[in-house]
Image 1: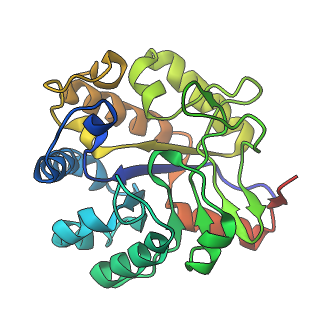
Image 2: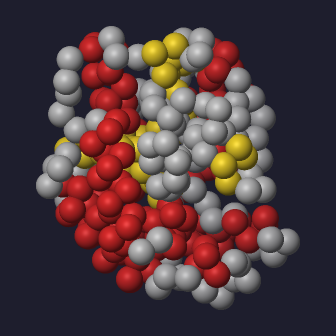
Image 3: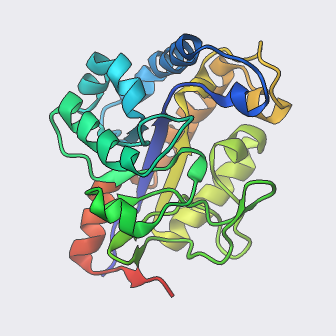
Amino acid sequence: MKTDPVVLLSFDVEEFDLPLEYKQQISIDRQLDIGYEGLKNILPLLQKKGIHTTLFTTAFFAENFPEVIRELSCQHEIASHTYSHTHFKNEDLLDSRLKLEEITGKKVYGLRMPRMKAVEPTQVSISGYVYNSSINPCWIPGRYDNRHIPRTIFNDNGILQVPVSVSPKLRIPLFWLAFKNMPYHLYLKLALKTLKNDGYLCLYFHPWEFAQIKMFDLPVYIKRINPDVLFKKIDQLISDLSKEAKFISTHKFVEDKKRGDLLSPLS
């Protein structure tokens, strides 16, 4: 059964703890402020009519900004990014889901692990999730090598795995760093090719990318684009992709796939 093409646009809504990875001190209040600054800056994108996204949100961030998360849940799916972006234990899977449900008053179905860390499907399942979107099925030097994992949605011991998109064959990544560093015309060409091949795109970004972070001693490839320029670039991407596909939440996509019985087991 052929389905209409869709875009699963998501943002990892989190405290900005990235400097800690580079041995730089940053207070928790400053982490939250930068995360919130970026979220406010992308509100014009999130308020676009017909644009539905998934906001993978840490429970800690949501606890500190419950009103804005609750308001965003009216148009967008709120999913879990565990409890804290810096620390993790298995109990955080359940605790974060329950806290987000308490804040939004809505069911939480999805999970994305901070920094795309691996997590056991059984732990995801017993914590009450339907799907997990924590796999970037490519090779990122120094991070992970997931080239052996299926590129598209699959069933893994009862949990639906929704990898973020990479191009067919060569598995060129299409995540936030690729978008930030690749010439726009090339990125769009790869995205459209992947959309045509797979029938959907799963893309993710972070609100803090749209905040001012140039004062931190981070690699150039992370902070090379001014937030205003980056905003215009992603706004153009949304406009270009809207001509080819609808923007829907990850949960809606998963439910549509389940109804169509288009899922393959992990081989």
